[in-house]
Length: 255
Image 1 (cartoon, rainbow, N blue to C red):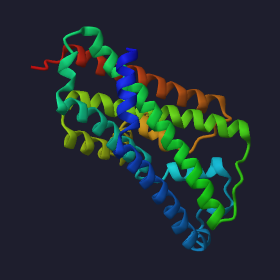
Image 2: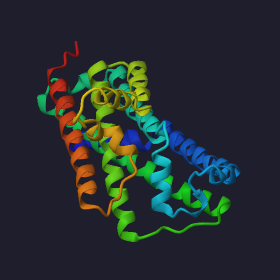
Image 3: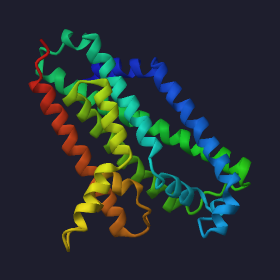
Image 4: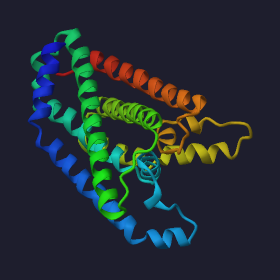
């Protein structure tokens, strides 16, 4: 396990695509704040949110709730590319005759996904701080306790999405198909379809437990019920799709 994790960590550190994605995300995040500044007066006049007055917690929730979720797109590209680059090289055949190695290689990529999501969040925080400071002269963070709970909840949800994408990539073993499915999920098309189906059936509300719906919903993380629901959805998706990915990898025919 440790050796496979070290190999994936080495690939991660040397991965130019990862650095390019983080730089692009930083640039577009700051540019997006600049564009918000250009149209802030029109938004406020039309009854929209006064973006310039939001603290960091409110601003993060506001940007994450805007479709499509750009963070999910970056996670999709990284996870699919990172897995498929190893799979297509055929390197896995060197050790995949061992059952434990098949399990450990998926677990290693789950932890690497967590590392990328963590770097993506760090990039978002730095970009937002720079952008809000430059264009809105507002660098307030808000309540520290609420801010920490927000980061924990959103990190786990985004990590769960990364594991979902890893599972999909393991199943389909195709870079293009994985990216397309990820884009569809980031646009939350399944969530919208679930909502449409629910409108036909009274008393059914399962769409609120769909991962992307939970991720983009504006929540009060000081509310114990909403925070617990966030953690529950993240935990279920993490465990379920990690287990599916591991099980499929064990049964995979590499010949």
